[in-house]
Image (cartoon, rainbow, N blue to C red; front, side, top):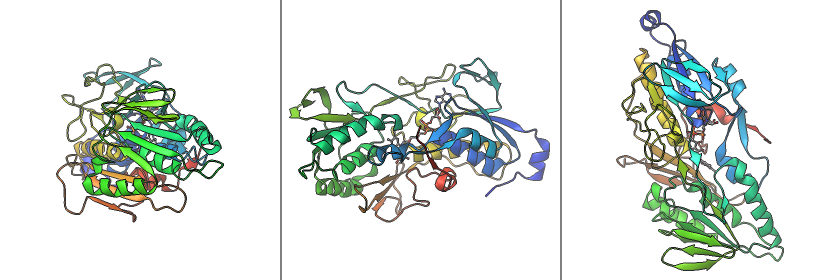
Length: 389
Ligand SMILES: Cc1cc2nc3c(=O)[nH]c(=O)nc-3n(C[C@H](O)[C@H](O)[C@H](O)COP(=O)(O)OP(=O)(O)OC[C@H]3O[C@@H](n4cnc5c(N)ncnc54)[C@H](O)[C@@H]3O)c2cc1C
């Protein structure tokens, strides 16, 4: 639904120019939210280096069903949303002059800037196969082939300290649990995590349900454990010692984008306030994996994007009441082979509210997408197309 600005507000203002840097969940959600709340009052530029938006949650399925990754061409999206697309990378911002400079040397003027450029993967433990990006699905597919031929019998999944969104590795372990070698044997699966309980961020009730699912599928879990190093045939767990293993898949930790001219914490992430405004700056917002937040996740990215868009629209006079961020974490856990029930997980990350926390085989939000986003999820529901690139 589009909320047009009141006539008075429209006539008193020139079109405000919003620059959105990024082409992922946070950027697309910001754009759609602005279109819904301040249509006609904003001119939007999308600044993104990659030609397509990729739906990352499907990277988990890709090794098992090649061609699963879906996406959207940014040029088509921008044209449909009447936004200008600049295919370049944001490298520097002058918040006082309101100028954003691209790697290609272009200076883009803005009235409001939303930085939604995502995070960067750090290197993982040597000797492990990294999994955190659709482009890394091929390496997991190689391990899958070895499990199927029987040359990998013991497979470990490692979630190091500092990883907030751990669900993809649990899904991967559950998907591997359905595999068999030529003699019909299941692989031995071990998941080592720094969390106190499986998917601890969702709270104890969910952790108990997920523990049961993992146990039923034969996935052994070591919680509150840190892997020190990986050798050819062993995994070394702190305070425990060596565990024999044939292959290891590890989630990378993330670091922030460190955009010149903008504040950042020691890891390069942008600090934001409860309206997604970059701290101590006016007219500059940030959302998504690029911001300081213990959990980097698409649904949370969308909530930050909505907060930024609502604040911008309200300042333009739109009939929107910006609400302080009060994040709800939603996760859809695939539990294995076709026919097995997925689980919808939800928790309030702020003060726990009655009726918000839950774990269920029935959808706890709609559309029941893996990335729960007010505007983007319904938008993508019928527009994602399979991509081979
Ligand atoms: C395997 C996997 C599974 C996941 N599963 C889920 C899930 O089930 N549910 C969920 O909610 N989340 C999930 N996530 C997390 C989710 O994908 C991310 O949290 C989300 O994509 C973050 O969105 P973002 O827009 O901040 O960053 P990104 O999606 O990383 O997008 C960043 C964008 O910015 C562009 N960019 C980069 N640098 C610049 C620059 N300097 N200037 C301009 N543009 C730039 C990039 O090209 C990209 O378009 C998963 C992640 C992975 C890796």
